[in-house]
Image (cartoon, rainbow, N blue to C red; front, side, top):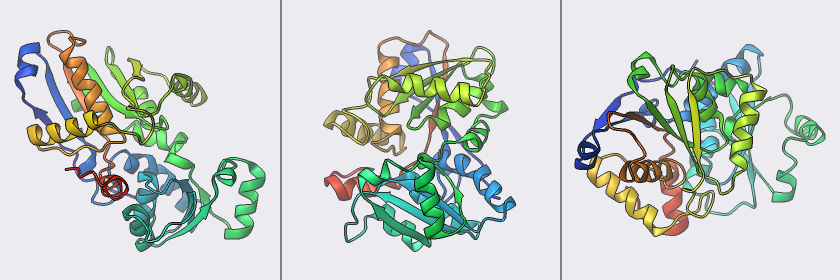
Length: 303
């Protein structure tokens, strides 16, 4: 079983927060484990337990070339003594980027498939073919979101977090957001910042809540206007903010998830969205390994 390190919560100070009479803290999931960082730790925890209890020796999953999920799954499988297989979207490029080379070093078998074939990743016939090719394996979906992932992410908030009136998180596949929603205390509001372009995320979250019959004592709101062009897209304004945040508070963010969420949250504070006396908890979902790949791909330096 994966064991987490203690998760620190850092309160930050800034003149804007004093002016607005707001408290802001950051729950540092990026420090939960030396390799299986952030929300991925919680999404993988019970999936790996299930794999081992079912006496599976192989984990198979899907992801893009810079996927935090691929990286974390390779590290988690290694820590648990399991083989791992990663089906990577797109053609292989040499040399491998930091994410994929690290996964390979952790023992993950990398197999590259074209984008048309990749879209079949949930089809029974395609999965049956994978069983013939790779033998028996435990399947974890792209991004890691399933019922066991949501069970894990529902453990992110602890009793010490009941003091906060607002919980803020980025949204990708929705597994972390759904788990947080299920664990809200009475009157807490969960604010989600989608890293993907489009309004479809509202339906995807609603579907997850319905599919897994998630109840909550709190409520949620989703913001879809902080994607900076779409998933894995960026603008200079976002890069400048990530550097400003690091220089101001000493905390690194990534440009795919946490940077966009923190940018949106800070803008909401600036524009008076939060009532005086609000206590806000920002969930740092990790993913900082991806900053190396981002720099490799764009040439843009990050903290």
